[in-house]
Image (tube, rainbow, N blue to C red; front, side):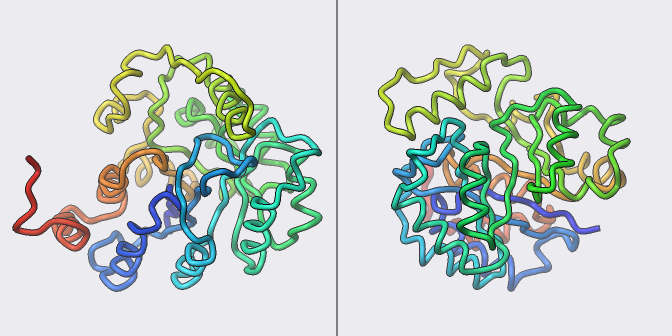
Length: 295
């Protein structure tokens, strides 16, 4: 079975992918044979339909989508704002992005709002839909109902469902290909404010004047640290993917990080996708040379 990774930074890391995707295509010996890129997701700046994160990326959408098409990779717009109303559906920039995305058959929308999905289904019929993790589906029955919804090609459950292995194993085989696990979530496992955090981002993307959400989690002031994320009870390691999830019939895994730096993105790719003996080769191809100074 192939493993499909859904990578962050469609717009945010456009320059990174311009350099990485030729490497992924032409140096196949560097990467695990079963490793595929299922999609790359993100959104540009100033999109009121955006959710999850606030993007500051400013790339030409035509160039971004053309790059993905060149390498036969699905583009996904992260339009997961949970507070969309009818009055927001006429937004010119977001509609133009969807129009461009709709020109091909293998592109999708990561979505939260039913109002927005109903509109997009009728106006841009070529797009598929991914149920966003911003819905914070922590109850397994709610998640199961979402997976059974034919409107969704994929569903990203809350990361705290990652290790409910007995229940996940009992899911119908026909639904397992729709499940997309979030592997490297940095959020505190005991967080009770996750939904409110996402709502705050939705308000800000809509231009509503509001306070930033203040994270109360331990270590929140220290930022993202991959080594600490690996200690999260919900973290899905490479070994977990190969030894637990793939044997159960799961094949889709999401990597977060579109608001991080490209150096961390590369570390995620090295960890999940690159054979250990070739990790130095990928570093050298991407950035490392004899004259690079760190300090």
